[in-house]
Amino acid sequence: QVQLVESGGGLVQPGGSLRLSCAASGSSFSFRYMTMDWYRQAPGKEREMLATITSGGRTNYVDSVKGRFTISRDNDKRTVYLQMNSLRPEDTAVYYCNSGGARGYWGQGTQVTVSS
Image 1 (cartoon, rainbow, N blue to C red):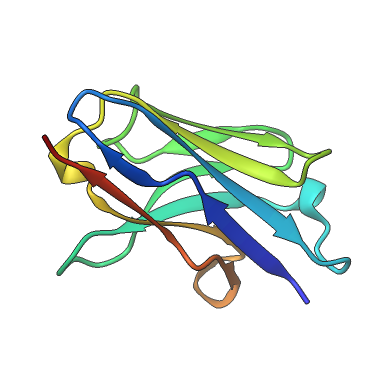
Image 2: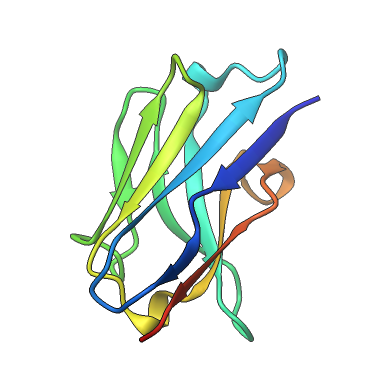
């Protein structure tokens, strides 16, 4: 059974930083060969993709987080990370990791709240 488990969310002041982690488990999930994504969903809004990292380490970001967020992966630990800097109140959302798109694998999400 494949599981993605996010952690690292919390309450942070504007301008602060957080690092999210997403650990993958399940013998059928070949993590090192999978493209991994981070999404978020704010209250009343649709889920949006933020960042992608391919098996080869190529990354891509949505414009709203480019230059502030960094996606990375550790294949030995089967974990993908999202380093978030210069956080803004509009970054408040539940953050999810994903592999395989809408019909793929999703974590349970981790809440990030940016507020003073």
